[in-house]
Length: 299
Image (cartoon, rainbow, N blue to C red; front, side, top):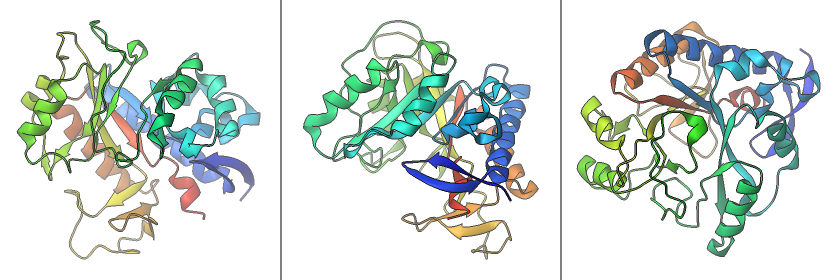
């Protein structure tokens, strides 16, 4: 295999082009599958910004097949990874694609006084910031919103802010979770498909599509496409690392997750079914996490 220096998350490492290109293809196929059922379904992969380039190599030019398949890109820890630490390599890549893709950045500041600086650095680049402070590393809180608007939001390119809330630790019931989000004016809400392993209904999601101020907004579902999670509906008794064969590697720091060979047909069938459930629940799109699995399978 031919190795190339690429970037994933916050690190610069050697990975194979072959596996990265398989992820490009997977994301494109997910988009095609979803849009056969819901024409304007929004696709937002998180991290793996080198996938926006041919052969997953920034020196090879833009991969327009990939960019045409997605509507935006989520990025973690671009300017702040606890402390101020700009990832200039990823920033350079994002600057090349930001005119055609909406960039959503979730920085993390360990010192809450740095939140304003993280917000401003993203806005200076034309990115949409969601800044997590010290108590919100795991996306469990609803921060106060400082740039609310009354506009109806019907496509990703129109958003000025977003809420990233995939943890339910602070909410004892589904109703309290839905009520808390309904009381906000965020342009886009990113949540899990499930609350305590029970899928949200179409009626639940419809409630969230109107801001507290009356404007319309987008509701996007989180899904991991590069790792399997043992608390999801698809997990079967007896599964473990190596069984099935495409459960390749434990996800360091997340004991309930395993990196997968995402090009395997069985895994892709699971993801397509998951996407179907997201569409049935009435979400406007999907946020594809762990697309950088190509790096973690190698290291």
